[in-house]
Image (tube, rainbow, N blue to C red; front, side, top):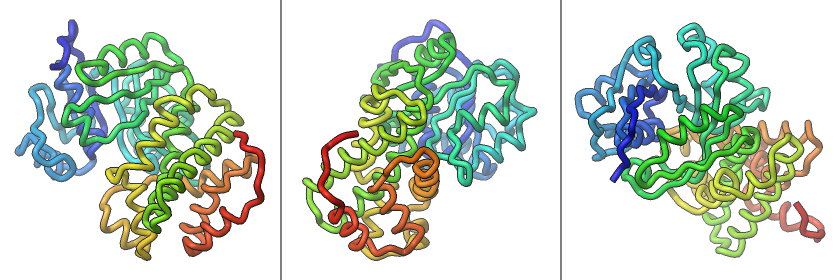
Length: 339
């Protein structure tokens, strides 16, 4: 049972996909008044009628306090804080087009994961550039599948922010029932871990699709984490973050469970399906595809070796056969195991 809140807040969630809806359900169960907005009015009207998001979370009824709203202006009218949950590739254009609607000094958080296409910028950098009036910002990430949160299964996440008052506010509001929140000040590490794990999940899915076994999967996860840490520390992230929920926790989850869209992409690539066929079959954003390109751009910029992510990039963008990518990894010279 969710704990009783001493103060019910008005919280706005922007993005009515599976993750945004799941977080809206959780916060409403925790006793808050939650406005859920999405960019497709017909979808929102359907949510209003059915009191359920049957497209992404079928059969999970909305609790009292969760209100789908069509109007973005209404959604952003005096919330206690705002949570953005839209695909990372759409964040800059969305914020740029609607910057004037975001109230100054209102806390702004996001649960999206990815790097900006073309610049490889982290989301907190985009937010600072597009809505500078929002001074209190935070990112939440960790090993979380939307369906499990919506079904009220035990979950733990990390919230990272430079604003201690906002950290306490988000933690108090989210930390309820079976949902546990840990705080951090390492926004770079949390964002980078959440983005890069999607690239490695494609690799793990492909390896499993090729029947390479559990040994290979464990090696990919372990050496993939080393790649994340090498790049992350060069970019200012903290080693402890990559060993925590937003790092290795999210990486293990995404690489090992078929609820992960990125892992499923790897499985389907191993079957010989094209990217177009895979995107059509999965039907939601597969963040690791765009992130793979930006990860390689960051590797060049920071002079970091990312062998696994490089092979994923080559499979996705250079039509390298998966078996050749595996051969390239296995033919690397033996070396000392270091991060």
